[in-house]
Image (cartoon, rainbow over all chains, first blue to last red; front, side, top):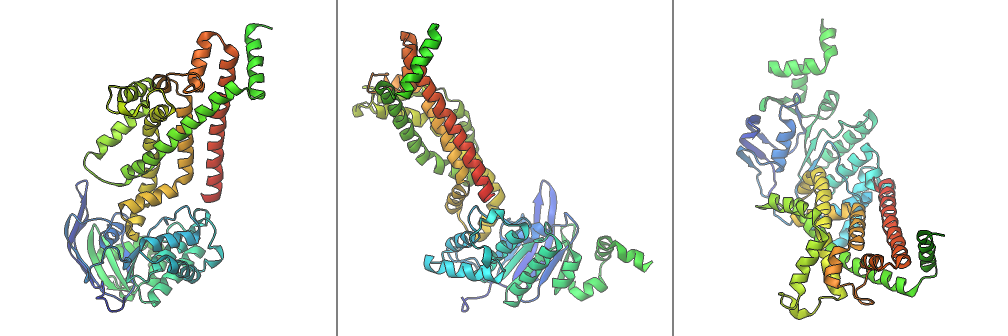
Length: 247
Length: 234
Protein backbone atom coordinates (compact mmCIF):
# COMPACT_ATOMS: atom_id res chain seq x y z
CA UNK A 1 0.00 0.00 0.00
CA UNK A 2 2.82 2.36 0.92
CA UNK A 3 4.47 2.27 -2.49
CA UNK A 4 1.34 3.40 -4.32
CA UNK A 5 0.87 6.98 -5.47
CA UNK A 6 -1.23 8.87 -2.89
CA UNK A 7 -4.84 9.81 -3.68
CA UNK A 8 -4.35 13.32 -2.36
CA UNK A 9 -4.32 16.11 -3.22
CA UNK A 10 -7.88 16.19 -4.49
CA UNK A 11 -8.69 18.93 -6.97
CA UNK A 12 -12.19 20.21 -7.70
CA UNK A 13 -12.29 22.34 -10.81
CA UNK A 14 -15.34 24.57 -11.39
CA UNK A 15 -17.69 21.91 -10.01
CA UNK A 16 -21.44 22.53 -10.23
CA UNK A 17 -24.34 20.35 -9.25
CA UNK A 18 -27.81 21.29 -10.39
CA UNK A 19 -30.96 19.58 -9.12
CA UNK A 20 -34.45 20.59 -10.29
CA UNK A 21 -33.13 23.78 -11.83
CA UNK A 22 -31.39 24.88 -8.62
CA UNK A 23 -27.61 25.05 -8.37
CA UNK A 24 -26.69 23.24 -5.15
CA UNK A 25 -23.00 23.62 -5.98
CA UNK A 26 -22.16 26.61 -8.14
CA UNK A 27 -18.76 26.65 -9.83
CA UNK A 28 -16.74 25.45 -6.88
CA UNK A 29 -12.97 25.05 -7.17
CA UNK A 30 -10.64 23.91 -4.43
CA UNK A 31 -7.73 21.67 -3.61
CA UNK A 32 -7.52 19.39 -0.58
CA UNK A 33 -4.11 18.19 0.55
CA UNK A 34 -3.17 15.51 3.03
CA UNK A 35 -2.72 16.55 6.63
CA UNK A 36 -4.91 19.25 8.13
CA UNK A 37 -8.38 18.37 9.36
CA UNK A 38 -10.81 20.18 7.09
CA UNK A 39 -14.17 21.17 8.54
CA UNK A 40 -16.94 22.27 6.19
CA UNK A 41 -19.34 24.85 7.61
CA UNK A 42 -22.35 26.67 6.17
CA UNK A 43 -26.08 27.18 6.51
CA UNK A 44 -28.60 24.46 5.66
CA UNK A 45 -28.79 24.20 1.89
CA UNK A 46 -25.33 25.70 1.38
CA UNK A 47 -24.29 22.49 -0.38
CA UNK A 48 -22.08 20.92 2.31
CA UNK A 49 -23.45 17.38 2.13
CA UNK A 50 -23.61 17.45 -1.67
CA UNK A 51 -19.99 18.64 -1.77
CA UNK A 52 -18.93 15.65 0.33
CA UNK A 53 -20.89 13.26 -1.90
CA UNK A 54 -19.41 14.74 -5.07
CA UNK A 55 -15.90 14.40 -3.65
CA UNK A 56 -16.56 10.83 -2.52
CA UNK A 57 -18.02 9.92 -5.89
CA UNK A 58 -21.56 9.17 -4.74
CA UNK A 59 -22.91 11.96 -6.94
CA UNK A 60 -21.58 12.93 -10.35
CA UNK A 61 -21.23 16.70 -10.76
CA UNK A 62 -23.42 18.33 -13.41
CA UNK A 63 -20.34 20.09 -14.73
CA UNK A 64 -16.70 20.51 -13.74
CA UNK A 65 -14.09 17.98 -12.69
CA UNK A 66 -13.25 16.03 -9.56
CA UNK A 67 -9.66 14.82 -9.85
CA UNK A 68 -7.84 12.59 -7.42
CA UNK A 69 -4.06 12.40 -7.80
CA UNK A 70 -4.26 8.64 -8.23
CA UNK A 71 -7.13 6.46 -9.33
CA UNK A 72 -8.61 3.69 -7.23
CA UNK A 73 -8.40 0.22 -8.72
CA UNK A 74 -11.78 -1.54 -8.94
CA UNK A 75 -11.70 -4.75 -6.93
CA UNK A 76 -9.12 -3.43 -4.48
CA UNK A 77 -10.11 -2.02 -1.08
CA UNK A 78 -11.34 1.55 -1.29
CA UNK A 79 -8.80 4.14 -0.23
CA UNK A 80 -11.45 6.62 0.88
CA UNK A 81 -14.43 6.12 3.17
CA UNK A 82 -17.48 8.00 4.34
CA UNK A 83 -19.52 8.12 7.53
CA UNK A 84 -23.07 9.42 7.25
CA UNK A 85 -25.33 11.42 9.52
CA UNK A 86 -27.49 8.37 10.13
CA UNK A 87 -25.24 5.33 10.51
CA UNK A 88 -26.12 2.53 8.11
CA UNK A 89 -25.60 -0.83 9.78
CA UNK A 90 -26.89 -4.17 8.59
CA UNK A 91 -28.88 -6.88 10.38
CA UNK A 92 -25.80 -8.75 11.51
CA UNK A 93 -23.71 -8.65 14.65
CA UNK A 94 -21.41 -5.66 15.14
CA UNK A 95 -18.40 -7.72 14.12
CA UNK A 96 -20.46 -9.26 11.31
CA UNK A 97 -20.93 -5.79 9.84
CA UNK A 98 -17.16 -5.31 9.79
CA UNK A 99 -16.49 -8.75 8.29
CA UNK A 100 -19.06 -7.98 5.60
CA UNK A 101 -17.28 -4.72 4.69
CA UNK A 102 -13.96 -6.58 4.57
CA UNK A 103 -15.50 -9.19 2.28
CA UNK A 104 -16.64 -6.43 -0.09
CA UNK A 105 -13.12 -5.02 0.02
CA UNK A 106 -11.78 -8.39 -1.08
CA UNK A 107 -9.85 -9.12 2.12
CA UNK A 108 -9.12 -12.87 2.41
CA UNK A 109 -11.45 -14.66 4.82
CA UNK A 110 -8.66 -15.67 7.18
CA UNK A 111 -7.65 -12.06 7.81
CA UNK A 112 -11.12 -10.62 8.34
CA UNK A 113 -11.71 -11.61 11.94
CA UNK A 114 -8.45 -10.14 13.23
CA UNK A 115 -8.91 -6.87 11.38
CA UNK A 116 -12.51 -6.60 12.56
CA UNK A 117 -11.57 -7.24 16.19
CA UNK A 118 -8.78 -4.66 16.08
CA UNK A 119 -11.18 -2.12 14.57
CA UNK A 120 -13.80 -2.74 17.26
CA UNK A 121 -11.19 -2.41 20.00
CA UNK A 122 -9.99 0.91 18.62
CA UNK A 123 -13.48 2.43 18.95
CA UNK A 124 -14.17 0.75 22.29
CA UNK A 125 -16.81 -1.69 21.07
CA UNK A 126 -14.96 -4.97 21.63
CA UNK A 127 -17.30 -5.91 24.49
CA UNK A 128 -20.35 -5.90 22.22
CA UNK A 129 -18.83 -7.52 19.15
CA UNK A 130 -21.52 -10.17 18.92
CA UNK A 131 -24.58 -8.05 19.64
CA UNK A 132 -26.93 -7.35 16.73
CA UNK A 133 -25.80 -4.03 15.27
CA UNK A 134 -29.32 -2.67 14.72
CA UNK A 135 -30.17 -2.71 18.42
CA UNK A 136 -27.05 -0.79 19.51
CA UNK A 137 -27.50 2.80 20.66
CA UNK A 138 -27.13 5.60 18.13
CA UNK A 139 -23.68 6.48 19.45
CA UNK A 140 -22.54 2.85 19.33
CA UNK A 141 -23.85 2.45 15.78
CA UNK A 142 -21.96 5.56 14.72
CA UNK A 143 -18.77 4.29 16.36
CA UNK A 144 -19.32 0.99 14.52
CA UNK A 145 -19.62 2.98 11.28
CA UNK A 146 -16.37 4.74 12.16
CA UNK A 147 -14.67 1.42 12.89
CA UNK A 148 -15.85 0.13 9.50
CA UNK A 149 -14.57 3.24 7.74
CA UNK A 150 -11.23 3.19 9.58
CA UNK A 151 -10.61 -0.56 9.37
CA UNK A 152 -8.57 -0.47 6.17
CA UNK A 153 -6.80 2.81 6.98
CA UNK A 154 -8.22 4.93 4.17
CA UNK A 155 -6.26 7.94 2.99
CA UNK A 156 -9.33 10.15 3.26
CA UNK A 157 -12.37 9.94 5.53
CA UNK A 158 -15.46 12.02 4.79
CA UNK A 159 -17.89 12.61 7.65
CA UNK A 160 -21.31 14.14 7.08
CA UNK A 161 -22.59 15.55 10.39
CA UNK A 162 -21.77 12.32 12.22
CA UNK A 163 -22.92 13.60 15.62
CA UNK A 164 -26.11 15.49 14.72
CA UNK A 165 -28.40 12.82 16.17
CA UNK A 166 -26.29 12.08 19.24
CA UNK A 167 -26.22 13.34 22.80
CA UNK A 168 -23.17 15.33 24.00
CA UNK A 169 -21.44 12.34 25.61
CA UNK A 170 -21.78 10.18 22.51
CA UNK A 171 -20.67 13.13 20.37
CA UNK A 172 -17.46 13.52 22.37
CA UNK A 173 -16.78 9.79 21.92
CA UNK A 174 -17.12 10.26 18.16
CA UNK A 175 -14.80 13.27 18.27
CA UNK A 176 -12.23 11.24 20.17
CA UNK A 177 -12.32 8.55 17.49
CA UNK A 178 -12.12 11.13 14.68
CA UNK A 179 -9.08 12.61 16.41
CA UNK A 180 -7.49 9.17 16.65
CA UNK A 181 -8.14 8.53 12.95
CA UNK A 182 -6.47 11.85 12.15
CA UNK A 183 -3.51 10.98 14.37
CA UNK A 184 -3.15 7.69 12.51
CA UNK A 185 -2.64 9.62 9.29
CA UNK A 186 -6.04 9.73 7.59
CA UNK A 187 -7.16 13.02 6.05
CA UNK A 188 -10.39 14.18 7.77
CA UNK A 189 -13.02 16.10 5.79
CA UNK A 190 -16.05 16.71 7.98
CA UNK A 191 -19.30 18.62 7.78
CA UNK A 192 -20.74 19.78 11.08
CA UNK A 193 -23.33 22.18 12.43
CA UNK A 194 -21.77 22.17 15.88
CA UNK A 195 -19.41 25.14 16.11
CA UNK A 196 -17.96 23.90 19.40
CA UNK A 197 -17.06 20.68 17.62
CA UNK A 198 -15.63 22.64 14.69
CA UNK A 199 -13.41 24.61 17.06
CA UNK A 200 -12.21 21.45 18.79
CA UNK A 201 -11.45 19.52 15.61
CA UNK A 202 -10.69 21.97 12.80
CA UNK A 203 -7.32 22.84 11.38
CA UNK A 204 -8.93 24.66 8.50
CA UNK A 205 -12.45 25.76 7.65
CA UNK A 206 -14.22 25.64 4.32
CA UNK A 207 -17.19 27.98 4.57
CA UNK A 208 -19.86 27.37 1.91
CA UNK A 209 -22.53 29.89 1.06
CA UNK A 210 -25.10 29.42 -1.70
CA UNK A 211 -23.17 26.56 -3.28
CA UNK A 212 -19.96 28.53 -3.51
CA UNK A 213 -16.75 28.35 -1.50
CA UNK A 214 -17.18 31.67 0.29
CA UNK A 215 -14.19 31.51 2.59
CA UNK A 216 -11.32 29.20 3.36
CA UNK A 217 -9.17 29.99 6.37
CA UNK A 218 -7.14 28.47 9.13
CA UNK A 219 -9.52 27.58 11.97
CA UNK A 220 -8.26 30.13 14.49
CA UNK A 221 -8.42 32.96 11.97
CA UNK A 222 -11.90 31.95 10.83
CA UNK A 223 -13.39 31.99 14.29
CA UNK A 224 -11.70 35.22 15.42
CA UNK A 225 -11.63 37.29 12.25
CA UNK A 226 -13.84 35.84 9.52
CA UNK A 227 -12.76 37.42 6.25
CA UNK A 228 -16.20 37.64 4.68
CA UNK A 229 -19.42 39.28 5.83
CA UNK A 230 -21.32 36.03 5.14
CA UNK A 231 -19.07 34.03 7.45
CA UNK A 232 -19.29 36.70 10.12
CA UNK A 233 -23.09 36.68 9.89
CA UNK A 234 -23.08 32.86 10.03
CA UNK A 235 -20.97 32.86 13.18
CA UNK A 236 -23.21 35.53 14.74
CA UNK A 237 -26.31 33.56 13.84
CA UNK A 238 -24.99 30.27 15.11
CA UNK A 239 -23.72 31.80 18.34
CA UNK A 240 -26.43 34.30 19.30
CA UNK A 241 -24.90 34.90 22.73
CA UNK A 242 -21.89 36.47 21.08
CA UNK A 243 -23.89 39.44 19.81
CA UNK A 244 -25.49 39.99 23.21
CA UNK A 245 -22.12 39.69 24.91
CA UNK A 246 -20.61 42.17 22.51
CA UNK A 247 -23.41 44.67 22.98
CA UNK B 1 -78.88 -33.41 14.68
CA UNK B 2 -79.29 -31.72 11.34
CA UNK B 3 -77.26 -32.59 8.25
CA UNK B 4 -74.82 -29.78 8.72
CA UNK B 5 -73.78 -30.55 12.27
CA UNK B 6 -73.68 -34.25 11.43
CA UNK B 7 -71.34 -33.55 8.54
CA UNK B 8 -69.25 -31.33 10.75
CA UNK B 9 -68.79 -33.88 13.51
CA UNK B 10 -68.01 -36.57 10.91
CA UNK B 11 -65.44 -34.21 9.36
CA UNK B 12 -63.81 -33.54 12.73
CA UNK B 13 -63.55 -37.24 13.48
CA UNK B 14 -61.94 -37.84 10.06
CA UNK B 15 -59.36 -35.22 10.83
CA UNK B 16 -58.71 -36.49 14.34
CA UNK B 17 -58.38 -40.17 13.40
CA UNK B 18 -56.10 -39.19 10.47
CA UNK B 19 -58.34 -40.72 7.79
CA UNK B 20 -56.07 -42.20 5.07
CA UNK B 21 -58.02 -40.71 2.13
CA UNK B 22 -58.00 -37.29 3.72
CA UNK B 23 -54.37 -37.71 4.76
CA UNK B 24 -53.30 -38.65 1.25
CA UNK B 25 -54.95 -35.58 -0.22
CA UNK B 26 -53.41 -33.29 2.41
CA UNK B 27 -49.93 -34.75 1.87
CA UNK B 28 -50.13 -34.32 -1.89
CA UNK B 29 -51.33 -30.74 -1.43
CA UNK B 30 -48.41 -29.92 0.83
CA UNK B 31 -45.89 -31.61 -1.47
CA UNK B 32 -47.15 -29.81 -4.56
CA UNK B 33 -47.40 -26.39 -2.94
CA UNK B 34 -44.09 -26.66 -1.08
CA UNK B 35 -42.30 -27.69 -4.27
CA UNK B 36 -43.90 -24.88 -6.25
CA UNK B 37 -42.94 -22.28 -3.65
CA UNK B 38 -39.34 -23.55 -3.47
CA UNK B 39 -39.13 -23.46 -7.26
CA UNK B 40 -40.72 -20.00 -7.54
CA UNK B 41 -38.62 -18.58 -4.67
CA UNK B 42 -35.38 -19.76 -6.24
CA UNK B 43 -36.16 -17.53 -9.21
CA UNK B 44 -38.30 -14.79 -7.69
CA UNK B 45 -36.06 -13.75 -4.80
CA UNK B 46 -32.90 -13.02 -6.82
CA UNK B 47 -34.91 -11.50 -9.68
CA UNK B 48 -36.89 -9.31 -7.28
CA UNK B 49 -33.68 -8.14 -5.60
CA UNK B 50 -31.99 -7.46 -8.94
CA UNK B 51 -35.01 -5.43 -10.10
CA UNK B 52 -34.70 -3.32 -6.94
CA UNK B 53 -30.99 -2.60 -7.28
CA UNK B 54 -30.04 -2.68 -10.97
CA UNK B 55 -30.73 0.16 -13.38
CA UNK B 56 -31.54 -0.77 -16.96
CA UNK B 57 -33.70 0.53 -19.78
CA UNK B 58 -37.29 -0.64 -19.53
CA UNK B 59 -36.98 -1.32 -15.81
CA UNK B 60 -40.02 0.77 -14.98
CA UNK B 61 -42.14 -1.17 -17.46
CA UNK B 62 -40.95 -4.51 -16.07
CA UNK B 63 -41.79 -3.48 -12.50
CA UNK B 64 -45.21 -2.19 -13.54
CA UNK B 65 -45.95 -5.43 -15.35
CA UNK B 66 -44.78 -7.49 -12.38
CA UNK B 67 -47.06 -5.55 -10.05
CA UNK B 68 -49.96 -5.98 -12.47
CA UNK B 69 -49.36 -9.75 -12.47
CA UNK B 70 -50.09 -9.80 -8.72
CA UNK B 71 -53.75 -10.03 -9.68
CA UNK B 72 -53.16 -12.93 -12.05
CA UNK B 73 -56.29 -15.16 -12.05
CA UNK B 74 -55.43 -18.75 -11.18
CA UNK B 75 -57.63 -20.20 -13.92
CA UNK B 76 -55.80 -18.16 -16.56
CA UNK B 77 -52.47 -19.50 -15.28
CA UNK B 78 -53.98 -22.98 -15.40
CA UNK B 79 -55.11 -22.48 -18.96
CA UNK B 80 -51.73 -21.12 -20.08
CA UNK B 81 -49.80 -23.98 -18.45
CA UNK B 82 -52.36 -26.45 -19.86
CA UNK B 83 -51.71 -25.14 -23.38
CA UNK B 84 -47.95 -25.36 -22.83
CA UNK B 85 -48.09 -28.94 -21.54
CA UNK B 86 -50.88 -30.37 -23.68
CA UNK B 87 -49.93 -32.95 -26.32
CA UNK B 88 -49.98 -30.33 -29.09
CA UNK B 89 -48.21 -27.70 -26.97
CA UNK B 90 -44.51 -26.80 -27.04
CA UNK B 91 -43.76 -28.90 -23.93
CA UNK B 92 -46.26 -31.63 -24.76
CA UNK B 93 -43.54 -34.19 -25.38
CA UNK B 94 -42.69 -34.18 -21.67
CA UNK B 95 -46.03 -35.81 -20.94
CA UNK B 96 -46.52 -33.82 -17.76
CA UNK B 97 -50.18 -32.89 -18.11
CA UNK B 98 -52.40 -34.34 -15.33
CA UNK B 99 -49.37 -35.15 -13.15
CA UNK B 100 -48.22 -33.51 -9.91
CA UNK B 101 -45.22 -31.87 -11.67
CA UNK B 102 -47.70 -30.01 -13.91
CA UNK B 103 -49.45 -28.74 -10.78
CA UNK B 104 -46.11 -27.66 -9.31
CA UNK B 105 -45.35 -25.69 -12.47
CA UNK B 106 -48.78 -24.04 -12.52
CA UNK B 107 -48.59 -22.98 -8.87
CA UNK B 108 -45.00 -21.78 -9.30
CA UNK B 109 -46.10 -19.59 -12.21
CA UNK B 110 -48.99 -18.33 -10.10
CA UNK B 111 -46.94 -17.32 -7.05
CA UNK B 112 -43.84 -16.10 -8.89
CA UNK B 113 -45.18 -12.56 -9.47
CA UNK B 114 -46.29 -12.33 -5.84
CA UNK B 115 -42.87 -13.38 -4.51
CA UNK B 116 -40.90 -11.28 -6.99
CA UNK B 117 -43.00 -8.12 -6.55
CA UNK B 118 -42.97 -8.25 -2.74
CA UNK B 119 -39.24 -9.05 -2.67
CA UNK B 120 -38.55 -6.16 -5.03
CA UNK B 121 -40.51 -3.78 -2.82
CA UNK B 122 -38.78 -4.85 0.39
CA UNK B 123 -35.30 -4.81 -1.14
CA UNK B 124 -35.97 -1.44 -2.81
CA UNK B 125 -36.82 0.06 0.58
CA UNK B 126 -33.64 -1.36 2.11
CA UNK B 127 -31.64 -0.16 -0.92
CA UNK B 128 -33.01 3.36 -0.45
CA UNK B 129 -31.68 3.38 3.11
CA UNK B 130 -28.28 1.88 2.45
CA UNK B 131 -27.42 2.60 -1.20
CA UNK B 132 -24.87 5.31 -0.42
CA UNK B 133 -23.19 3.20 2.25
CA UNK B 134 -22.92 0.15 -0.02
CA UNK B 135 -21.55 2.22 -2.90
CA UNK B 136 -19.14 3.90 -0.49
CA UNK B 137 -17.87 0.49 0.64
CA UNK B 138 -17.29 -0.43 -2.99
CA UNK B 139 -20.11 -2.98 -3.35
CA UNK B 140 -21.22 -3.61 -6.92
CA UNK B 141 -24.80 -4.16 -8.05
CA UNK B 142 -24.87 -7.92 -7.45
CA UNK B 143 -23.05 -7.79 -4.15
CA UNK B 144 -25.52 -5.14 -3.00
CA UNK B 145 -28.55 -7.15 -4.13
CA UNK B 146 -27.30 -10.24 -2.34
CA UNK B 147 -26.38 -8.33 0.81
CA UNK B 148 -29.82 -6.71 0.93
CA UNK B 149 -31.55 -10.08 0.48
CA UNK B 150 -29.62 -11.29 3.51
CA UNK B 151 -30.49 -8.10 5.38
CA UNK B 152 -34.25 -8.49 4.84
CA UNK B 153 -34.22 -12.28 5.36
CA UNK B 154 -36.90 -12.27 8.06
CA UNK B 155 -39.30 -10.34 5.87
CA UNK B 156 -38.51 -12.79 3.07
CA UNK B 157 -39.67 -15.65 5.28
CA UNK B 158 -43.06 -13.99 5.66
CA UNK B 159 -43.19 -13.31 1.91
CA UNK B 160 -42.46 -16.95 1.11
CA UNK B 161 -45.10 -18.06 3.64
CA UNK B 162 -47.60 -15.74 1.94
CA UNK B 163 -46.67 -17.34 -1.37
CA UNK B 164 -47.25 -20.80 0.11
CA UNK B 165 -50.62 -19.69 1.43
CA UNK B 166 -51.61 -18.48 -2.04
CA UNK B 167 -50.40 -21.71 -3.67
CA UNK B 168 -52.01 -24.14 -1.27
CA UNK B 169 -55.38 -22.39 -1.33
CA UNK B 170 -55.86 -21.80 -5.07
CA UNK B 171 -58.11 -24.16 -6.98
CA UNK B 172 -58.35 -23.01 -10.61
CA UNK B 173 -54.84 -23.73 -11.85
CA UNK B 174 -54.37 -27.18 -10.29
CA UNK B 175 -57.85 -28.20 -11.36
CA UNK B 176 -57.06 -27.50 -15.02
CA UNK B 177 -53.54 -28.91 -15.27
CA UNK B 178 -53.93 -31.66 -12.65
CA UNK B 179 -57.37 -32.85 -13.66
CA UNK B 180 -58.33 -33.78 -10.07
CA UNK B 181 -57.50 -37.47 -10.68
CA UNK B 182 -58.37 -39.50 -7.58
CA UNK B 183 -55.23 -40.58 -5.75
CA UNK B 184 -52.91 -38.96 -8.28
CA UNK B 185 -53.56 -35.25 -8.63
CA UNK B 186 -56.37 -34.63 -6.16
CA UNK B 187 -55.39 -31.89 -3.70
CA UNK B 188 -57.33 -30.21 -0.91
CA UNK B 189 -58.93 -27.45 -2.93
CA UNK B 190 -59.95 -29.57 -5.92
CA UNK B 191 -61.23 -32.29 -3.61
CA UNK B 192 -63.33 -29.78 -1.68
CA UNK B 193 -64.83 -28.51 -4.93
CA UNK B 194 -65.59 -32.04 -6.15
CA UNK B 195 -66.87 -33.54 -2.89
CA UNK B 196 -69.13 -30.56 -2.28
CA UNK B 197 -70.73 -30.95 -5.69
CA UNK B 198 -71.06 -34.71 -5.10
CA UNK B 199 -72.64 -34.08 -1.71
CA UNK B 200 -69.88 -35.76 0.37
CA UNK B 201 -69.90 -32.95 2.89
CA UNK B 202 -67.86 -34.62 5.67
CA UNK B 203 -64.77 -35.09 3.46
CA UNK B 204 -65.15 -31.58 1.98
CA UNK B 205 -65.56 -30.05 5.42
CA UNK B 206 -62.70 -32.07 6.87
CA UNK B 207 -60.38 -30.87 4.13
CA UNK B 208 -61.71 -27.35 4.64
CA UNK B 209 -60.82 -27.53 8.33
CA UNK B 210 -57.29 -28.73 7.54
CA UNK B 211 -56.79 -26.08 4.85
CA UNK B 212 -58.05 -23.30 7.08
CA UNK B 213 -55.82 -24.49 9.93
CA UNK B 214 -52.78 -24.54 7.65
CA UNK B 215 -53.43 -21.05 6.31
CA UNK B 216 -54.08 -19.70 9.81
CA UNK B 217 -50.96 -21.36 11.20
CA UNK B 218 -48.89 -19.88 8.37
CA UNK B 219 -50.13 -16.39 9.11
CA UNK B 220 -49.49 -16.76 12.82
CA UNK B 221 -46.02 -18.15 12.10
CA UNK B 222 -45.31 -15.25 9.76
CA UNK B 223 -46.20 -12.60 12.31
CA UNK B 224 -44.35 -14.40 15.12
CA UNK B 225 -41.20 -14.63 13.02
CA UNK B 226 -41.45 -10.96 12.12
CA UNK B 227 -41.94 -9.91 15.74
CA UNK B 228 -39.10 -12.06 17.03
CA UNK B 229 -36.76 -10.76 14.34
CA UNK B 230 -37.78 -7.18 15.09
CA UNK B 231 -36.99 -7.66 18.76
CA UNK B 232 -33.68 -9.33 18.11
CA UNK B 233 -32.35 -7.39 15.13
CA UNK B 234 -34.22 -4.10 15.05
